Image (cartoon, rainbow, N blue to C red):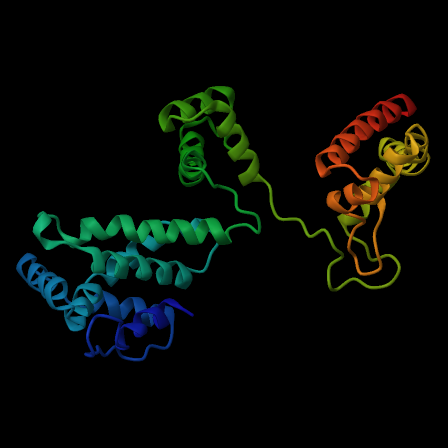
Length: 314
């Protein structure tokens, strides 16, 4: 779905906004779309208030469309500021249009603020969210501080380069002084600046072999990843677990008296063909002629004794 399609969606009735519709000429490409929205008339302050009141009081879709259409050029202007992230301009406009429509729906004309000022926040918020989701395969910014760094670090680095000597313009990483300046200006920690710069300087790496490769020589970076199953410590731990589960449990059971051993086996080790366990406390109590509480006490004492045996065995 393109920015053009987003705007043409305004021609469809919106839920809760009545049944009227708008018409927008079919446009062939992005340049034609931009040229068309730049020719759309602007609204005066009085017209804007009138349309906003009609929308707020009567859910007038036609009024909403007038407000949106007159501010489409604002979305185009804002979206141009984010072309440096390598994402399609049409997609940036599309997301900005979504933000604009959200702003129009929530705009209160009685606050004394023009829609252009109110909508700016919503437009940027939608574009920011789109960039964060699509700039890299793995999201590079999640916290508020990280988002602030992501959208300011690039421009600040360019400012540092512009003010640096010509010999330093090829330097990619920030200096210690520049890191301090960024941290102070954006009110974040130095460590967060360094981490975000590292994230932004990297790129997505395809671990699997590329689709064009074939034959025995085709392999990707995933071939260099370690197999934890053969790591010495993991092998020793697995061997120890196997010993405890077999010889250790057997030795711990041998340390119990026959009654305690049978209670533990029925309660913890027995599994029937239907997946159910062994006998219940009440069933064992009836067999031995004691209370269920007494069986529970024997079970607890037996488990403590088994733990001591297993500790010594390990």
